[in-house]
Length: 406
Image (cartoon, rainbow, N blue to C red):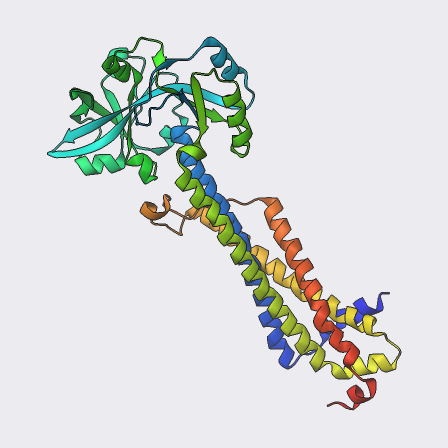
């Protein structure tokens, strides 16, 4: 039988504590709350980053190919996607799908209101899976009817509210050229992405409109948007795509297109690390305090054990076993609290956010087993390692004085 483990068990389970009873409960509560906050912090930050990335990626893709020139306007110069480049994109195992597009600045006029907008033209190859998830009214453009599709348009909920429009309404859009070119459109759908830069800046229409206004031929396009399978591989995949492009084309990733959002998301990682360190310190301080109180309260027992021949290290292990037991209870309760609140939020979305400020209507949760396991292991290792220092107080206890101590 392990002598130290046996004594620690008697202390932890059957011993009647006095003052230390309250301190131990506070220590357990401290570890529980610290772990719960750390679990929820990582889950919320990862969920938040994933949701924002999906919003931006869903509308603009991961990589864009445009013509290589000095044109810095919203309207890209036309080019023809050669067969070799198209084949490379189709055979690239990291590419999920791609589609052509073109943009053109325009002015929306309706109900005595005007709004500057960027018309994004797409064709029948466009992947609607993401937009369908965010349509709040109406439907998507029906490219099966080529004539009707030339007049159909999707606008954001932000633009619809600004111009007092709804699904089914007609209005005039003026395309910006040497002379304004008016075109009549019908709203077939209203979407709400939740990212102001997108909702405020774009409408979706037929690529053929841009081609006709710019007098392009049937094969000319303004660019290609590419969606990759694994966003964590964005840089190497984007570099590979760029290296295989002809000299007249260039490509850039979404992190280069919208750097402000991704810079903001990267700063969240710093905030998370600071919060994790603070929560870990709180848990450690609570456990150190509890261990010191337990050692001082059991000075008499320490003296007796020393008089019976127990070594300092043997007695230290008794208190470290006891501390490990308390940490284990705190971790168990912390996991139950953190995971419980997280799963509750996932199913109910009860904790709301201001979408105008955070791009999301509720706090997202994304759990990963490796994160939860890592937090538990780090908490155990750090707490027990730090607790070795106050346990050295046992070596200062004199058996004679301890036995006489009341």
